[in-house]
Image (tube, rainbow, N blue to C red):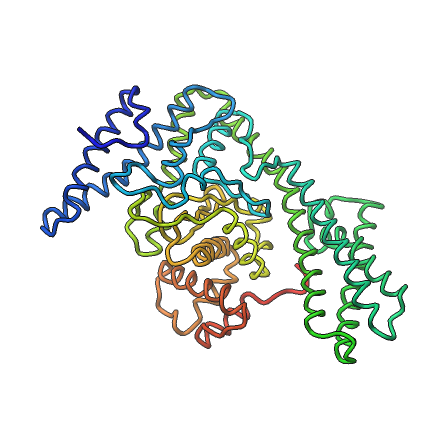
Length: 471
């Protein structure tokens, strides 16, 4: 008799029963031969593992169709199904579930600029789009509107903290009047919204007229002038000994955090209209389609995602496998969110590329398997293996690097990178792989002050990723 799998509760479905029986038989053979040193047995184990890897996608597709056939208002999966879909755990006999997997599938996503999905979340959203159903609940617990409200509160907190700290720090400096400090702090606090709209050339600013446009322009100048004034005051205070470098860095870090939050709020507000556009686009495309056509659409989308998920393993020179193959930890969603914020902010031009203006900030999907992250341009998503190879920051850096490379429509990056002496003669594929590795070192080492890259590469990256005064 075949070993039990985590999906055996679907044995009442004839097709699923056949697939699960095949999986159980293959697992049984793998377990019996995996310690053998005979070459033929090793060949058999490798072939069966490859078949099981392919079977994951067949089972996932069938599971999606079964749940969708019930035509629920929102698509949901039980915990066993999510454990299979999200972590690749199929049977204890093949490999134990990743450490902490049961808690992992129940965790909330952090509230941040990037929306983070598990793989089952992605399938639930796919169902809602193709079948014109309400969007699934965000794993962070926020709706599109409440995400905006949460970031507005976060920005208010940044403003108040900066005002309070500036009034305290600059009050210690002789020669600076209290009313001057209060005015400076007020301008930095109250003008950051208009400054951000103008600096980013948002649609809201471009299409505004009259008093509204004038107000944003005034706020932009107020903030810009106040930022310059603050820099001068801090430098003078350090030179006179009134402030130390640590206090100065803290002030500038708080200001930068406020600017990043204001920028994030602009992007999050945009996402509301983009989601409405996406749902309208799918609704128009499938309004007159029968259920059979909708099932084909979901199956096709899953097949496309499979091809990109396999790239996450191939980029790390691993055999593509969505299934658990040994004991390992899965990366927490909160860690992913923190690293995404940290690493994306280290690339000053990340959010100014045309693809972000057109399609928004890429959504993030944690996919089963091991490897490095990648970018799926077909639906603007970053794919991150839940079991990253080497480290989580390397996996995420590769995903961001792939996004930067693929969205380089004006060849600002490629033209500069291919001129590096070490890169001459490389194919476009090899050039991309080389860039992802160098970009990882740039984000995680060079931006922290360590010289790791070769001299020509370091010089090229300084030019390619130079920070602009204003985007």
